[in-house]
Length: 440
Image (tube, rainbow, N blue to C red):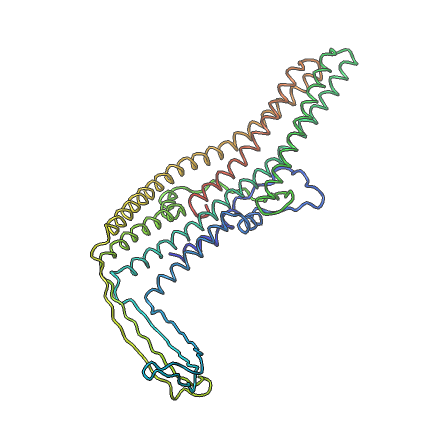
């Protein structure tokens, strides 16, 4: 099971590399010397620096250490000790009532002790099961955080790419406004238009300039957000991929999601750990049988010179302890563990329902966004043709400036919708991959 999870972790970057964006139009150039990253590089960097992943990795290490400690509870505890006691050169003899000299006032002792619980009411077995389940939960949580951070990084990455294309759209809007102003000015000078047309064209030009400034500000913000996400203290430009992923096959995706979703696996492992804690609480009703052995040597000669005169003292002890009553503390522990088991179990069941509902929502978003790509493309073609006809009609005096402004606004909106549809699809695809727990 853990090997499969590590395989999921290894496939995270490739899962999000498959969601690259097509460079259908020439992107806006980045700043000189600006760092530029691909989606795979952005995901790799983000997984190294994001606090959520660092915390999840730490929880995994802690759970692993606790699991080793649970196994170590079956092994004997070993203690080694030694001491040196230096007293006065003469001592009082209470039997004779006189002070007698001591030939060797320094004594040395060395000892080794072993202790082992032979039986503890199956508490160690329950602790081992709980520690193993806790490690599985931490492992699933680590995988889940990696997918969540990867999905967030993909969203920020695609947002940066979308803002670059929106700058291009705003620049095209500005170019059209300049052309519109030139046409209206020429017509006014020729007496074929009113001064109102030129003034309106100047207002439209000003609005286009403001739209470009706003698009550039959004682009700078998106670059800064991408830099923060990947741990770089400067704006970072996203590099578009050359492949646009198709709509995935979702025929068998729902049952796969219920089995492989990191959030579901984490919740199930937490429920298993809570059930194991109930067994730990049951163990308090059983007696405890322990074994201890100690062996020590003591003498007056320094151990580095000779130990032949040392006296040997050893002891082997068996001890039995059984708590018959402790003020209902065991009962309280039992109730607390049972309640926690019920709560975590209900939470795990709710997580499954939640993932099922989110999958339905995300899948609908994915299909809708993919359908919008084709519709938006057709709208751009229609708006471009309508703009061409309207421009020509206005140039020849057969149309009004209001018709031209409307056609230009429709063209700009169609281009914005096309950019939004394309990147909404890519973001929705990344969200589905994070929910399912594997590449589509």
